[in-house]
Each structure stands twice: as structure tokens, then as C-alpha cells.
Amino acid sequence: MIGTTFLRQSIILSFEGEDVALREIGPGGIFVSRIISRYEDSRYRVSVNTLKGKHFDLQLIIRQDMDQALMVDTIYWYIALRGYPFGTPMLPTFGCCRPELGALSMAYVSDLTVWEKIREFSSVRGPGTQPPSRMRWHQLMVRAMTVVVRGWRNSERRIIPGLITPNNIVVPEPDFRRGAVQNNLTGWKKYDGPLSLIRPLWRNIYQHTISHYPWVKDYLERDWILESFVEALGVDEARKWLAELQVEMNANDVDEMGMGFAETLTKFVDELQDQYFMPLALRAAIHRYREWRTGHAEGSLRARLDIIEELSRLYKLDRLPEIARFTLFRNTYFDDADPALLAVFDRLLGRMFAHPKRRSTQMVELSDLQALLTDGDDRTAFNRLVFPHRQRHERMEVQAIGHSERKQVIVRSSIVDKHNSQYSVGEPAGPAEVGLLYRLFLQAGFPKTLSKADRYFVAIDEAEQVIGGLVYRKQDDDSVFLDGIVVRPVFSERGIAAAILTDFCTRMASRHYKTIKTHYFLRRFYEKHGFRMDQRLGGLVRFL
Image (cartoon, rainbow, N blue to C red; front, side, top):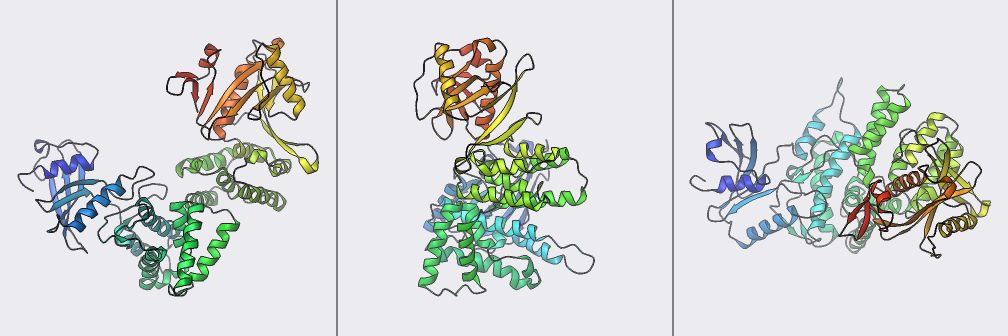
């Protein structure tokens, strides 16, 4: 490499434009060590340390067939998979390729490979030792196999991404840290149906491990390999692919995988159909909470809610559907609650699973659950569960109204005006309240016509009279349009309209909307509350 720009270019491309001139590297600033390679090439780790303390690690590969068609295809696939625009990359950053030098480079991953961790985990045995928990094995194996499935998915299901072996996969620690990768794509093959992908995962990772370390068999579960497909593809796509796998297995030898795999597959597919699949991140958060609770049995309400919120943040559980947050609270804060309460909680979770497009606040079971909470701490935890975007001091109540056959659930929140008078805000209890709201708009000189797309929130005083509210409608999955806010003239200049708007924005954020748009008029009022002119979206917009 002497006399070329290969090393400098490799650093620039592998480390997001970082440039290093030779004068910045002192004596001994470049160290090269050989890497044991299982492939037909020579591999080296090149560590570069500058005089100012910057450190760069590269993997250098020397091959004699750099210009052959297969190698060129490998490089193209590598660049395509590394640059996949959705989700975390499953390969290290590609550096530089110089066919005339027979060399290519990429960022070096210094974390332990999965096989090194398997050896480490397996070596902890015997009296006086504390072996890694089943959850640590669970995380290691599923995260490792998920990387492979993601690579296959990112190739548009066209290739098996490299040799599937735990020596070629890196899963970083701690467990909430993202960035699990395959070290390289050498040995990739064309995808030829479900068995061409499941066989190497089953044999080279699961069977490989228990064959070399049979005493860990009790820690490993066969269905973890199937979980990796759900983690990578999502439930719906995984179910389709698993159905294809069952068809192919039935057309061949259903027992060819051995070790009860066919029975495990059938059971897993049935469970995926009948109950909520808990993502690995959610399982890990629950496991960590229980570990924390073991050492903090007398933890205060604030401490317990703080650790739940911290775990939600670390494991990014807010990216999951609403049922994930409810499952988290069910298995953490409420885990040791009264059996009668847990039965109602489980019934609510079952309803949420059966109706994934309905919000929990539209389900009567949520009101039933709230009715069983008599302890003040439990009601506070319930509010944090149902209304995570609310401030802790804000009071919320879930009400079920109507006849037993046709109950309606309403979420009431409390707002306060400038005179400390309280009002409740929620969806209308019936057509009469909608009519009163339309009358207020008409009296304010803002005539509106009824529309099936319109949705409403009304503000009610202590006398149960409608004193204001707003009208909005959904535009798409990410945005809503606020069509107007109104308050009875006798209640004007008391900050009620502003309080209604703030409450509305909080509710929309909790429903995972990203923007609220509204009319140009009353621009000064809306701009005081976070709205801005947006030429691209064409109006006043508040980003949530």
C-alpha cells in the first residue's frame, strides 16, 4: 500500500469523511496485525492512531481475484446492503476497493463475535459460579439470527447474505445497544426457498452450539430461530414466510431438520395467530425491571415509574404498538397485583390484540380496569400507562357511558383557567353535546356543516354544561387538521382556548400523529402555541 492513497481513502470512506494526513500520524502510529481467515484471502487489522488522539480501525482484505465476476458481485451486494435506507445497517461501513492492488477495506468491528460469546457463556459452569441467564442466551441467539434474516430481507429476498456462522456475526453489548452486524458477505448464495435460509441458521447456530456445549441445551429454545424472522420481518410478513416454510417442508421430508423442529414450527405458528408476540426488546425490558425489583423491593412509586420510563427509552419501546406499553406495565408494575385485577388486565390485552387498529381508550375493558384501582399509587401508575405524554400531576379519567350492550368509552382530562376554575375535556358523550358545540361555532360567526369525517372534543364546566371545544379531522396516518376552537363568550379571556389546544396536542401526540395543521386565521393565537408557517405543507403547522 506504500506510495498509494488507499489507506487515506479507506479512512475517509469508512469513517464518514474523516481525513488523516500522514503528518498527523507519529512514529508507531500505524499498527498492522494479521486476522485468522477462513476464506481464500489474507486479512489484516490496521489500527491508525493520530498525534491528536484519534483512532481508526480498518479491516484490510488482500485477494488475487478482485476483478473476477463473483468478487465484483460480492462488492456490489455489500454496498447495496450496507446502504439499505431503512433500519440499522447489517454490515460494517465499506471503505475502498482497488482491484489493481488486489485490496479492499472496511471498518473493523472490535466487539466479540457471537461464537466468542457462546464460548464465554458456556465456560461459566460449576460450583460457585453464576452462569448467564436464559434471557442473555435468548438475546444473543435471536439478535444474531435476526441480523442474517435482515440481510436476506434487505436483498429483496434474493441472496443468503454470506456464510451463516456465529464466527461471522457480532452482537454488541449492552443488550439495548443497536448495531449487530455480519462481518462480511464472503460465501453468499442465491436464495432458493425457505429451507435454503432456515437450514444454515438451524444447523450452524443452534445445533452447532449444543453439539459443542451440550450442557447449555437447557438454556436454549428451538423457537428462537423462528422469533428472529418475526423480529426482522414483522408479524404479518413472518407468518406468510413461515407458511411457505411449512409447505416446502411438507413437500420434502418434514422431519429432515430433526430435533423436534417440525413440531416447534407448528406450535409457534399457532401461537403467532392466537396471541400477542412480545418483541425481544420488550422481553428484555421486563427482565431488567424484575432484576431491579429484586434489589429494590421497597422502591417508591416514583422510582418504579422512573425505571419503567427509562427502560422504555433505552429499548425504544415507544416505536412499538400501544399493546407493547400495556404488556410492559402488566408484567412490571402490576405483576404482583390482585388476581381479579390481572384477569381484567389480561382481558384488555386480549381485546387489544384482537383489534389492533382500535385505541385502548375506546375499549370498555380499560374503564373496567380503572374501576378496580383503589390505591392512589396504582391510579397514578394507570395514568402513566394510558397517558404517557401527560404530566404526572395532570388528572385523567376513563369513563364508560351508555347501556351495557352499547357502552362508549370517554377519556376525560382536567384543564384549569386563569382563575383556577377546573373544566373537563373529552369526546362528546352523545349527539346532544355535538349539537351544542356546533351552536357555539354558529354563535361565534364560524358556521360549520356536519361532516362524517369530523371529530370533536368538548370542554365541560362543573355544572356539566358545554362551554367550548374543537373540531378536527384525520388527514392521513401522520397528520390531523384542526378545523377550529371555540369558547362561550362569557368564558373568554380566561385562557380556556389555549388550555383546550394544549390538551388536544398532547392527545394527538399520544396517538402518534406527527403534525397538526390548521387555518391561516387566528395566526397570532396559534403561533403563541407552537404553530409555524410551513410553505411545504401549506399552512400553519405544529410538529409534535
